[in-house]
Image 1 (tube, rainbow, N blue to C red):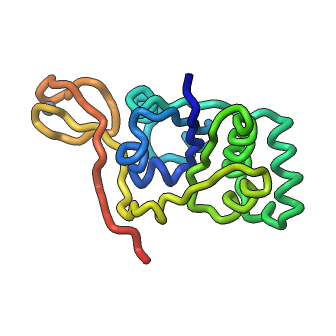
Image 2 (image 1 turned 180 degrees about the vertical axis):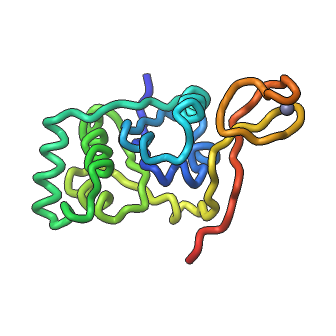
Length: 169
Ligand SMILES: [Zn+2]
């Protein structure tokens, strides 16, 4: 029985927070986030498998509830379809589980607070670096976009955080 669920936005993957702060915890995101990520579907699926990540579509009725609330708070124009879907997913689990939405988006945080959903920022949590997901050969260390076996040396490829850089402030 899992009590605590984190609903996570795109930032969580870009910053690598899912590796640093969430391993072993039940994490859920929506398909829209997967589409926003600049990595191949295969790599994302491996991240999902390694980090106990669920990908669930949000329901029409909760999406409608979120849109109505966002109109009331004046946040509707600041929220993308992905944002709305994330909040809707959090709403579906709220009251059943201890839900925390992880996002740096203030419009998301604001609408969540109206629903009584807890939110937490990633940048405030001290994650400054940005990363890109690739695959690296465990033998020759070459970097690839996808695949399971290195075409050069035949060793296994593992998912790897690459291209780190500090966020511009
Ligand atoms: Zn290799």
